[in-house]
Length: 162
Image 1 (cartoon, rainbow, N blue to C red):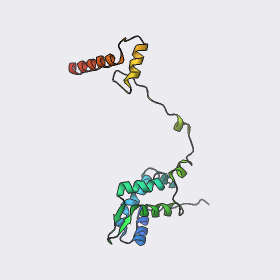
Image 2 (cartoon, rainbow, N blue to C red):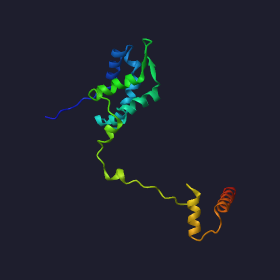
Image 3 (cartoon, rainbow, N blue to C red):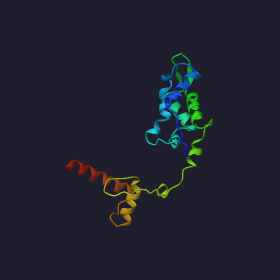
């Protein structure tokens, strides 16, 4: 028999926050919606890897501020609300981001990074590289400073002529 896991809805977390910290669920809804926003892309528990960890708690503080004043007038640390959410979803623990990332199964496409090489006439990156290439190809005998000035003049003329 296949076991089906039901994920908590952000509303259930908000109701839990209201019981724990006072006020009403709507005081906390935006924070719990933020923690679970990745469900929009992947409605599996693995969506939690995005924000359900210690770094996610600090990110929630940056997004929502350090405290929330609930409808009962009580200032509640946003981190407490986030900790409650993460503990409810992660069997009482607050994992690190590394706990999640270490469990990603590496795929070949993940490790095949490359730097796009520049093509075209527009400047890109360190001009010394382009200048050295021009010198090596025998297209200039100018020094770097003179070469850059000549390129700037050419660019200005091209812009004015266009």
